[in-house]
Length: 325
Ligand code: F6P
Image (cartoon, rainbow, N blue to C red; front, side, top):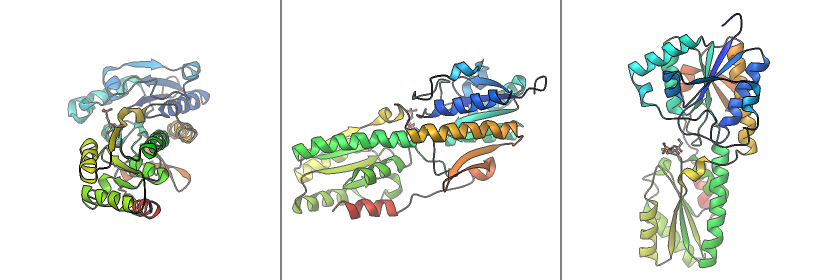
């Protein structure tokens, strides 16, 4: 607090995600409207450690919510895994005189929140990752846009693979989680999907057997979705072609899935979460994670939120199989 005025910091950390800018705008405009100062911290935790900051005006966040990426830039910060880095980040938090810091990022970024909270900082996390791999929330900023990008690719690949009567194997981002791949498989009508969550139970041989059965049933093309966490997409495509004789092409979407204009869903939730995070600090709440579950926004205790686990619904894979006959 400076002369009775609250000071709120905001940073984006880890991989960028479409919608992060809408969340930044949500934090900045809410805080300014409520009479607070807002400090933008560049390049995630590394910017905090180095004191790389800007004071935000309302105009600084004009015309950003329709842009992918993050105007604050972001980075992965190995220093935040060390005692020295955490101590320094906490010291800069105190020197800046922050009443709270909003961290927009994924799981790794939230571990940084916990470390800072243990050193007396007040940290509010907003789930920002395309991977949807944060246990305490059914929604993370960027997931919807990444799925739309993946689905667009699936539809385009289906056009060309059905024209040529080929098989397409397409790899989706998601690190160790298969949510993006699974959603694109269900929504895109894929014949098969390989995700880390079903690794070992769905094998390459099962995929090939399925493709052979599809051919005997008169299917002229096949679409196989592979999650990044399973990998081996190019190898699998070659194996399918070698064994079945069906021409097979591999496509790896990679970082294409991290960019682009955020969807309406991402802009909506990111704006709400930015607003709620700023309000938590203004209302004196400490160390929270903003989540969205069963149609409602929630502000969860940081430690409780980080101890939660989640499991992908087995039903998704069953539906892919049931609907791809
Ligand atoms: O966490 C988001 C994500 O895009 C993952 O899906 C992917 O595994 C990873 O980041 C890639 O990280 P980087 O951009 O550092 O290569």
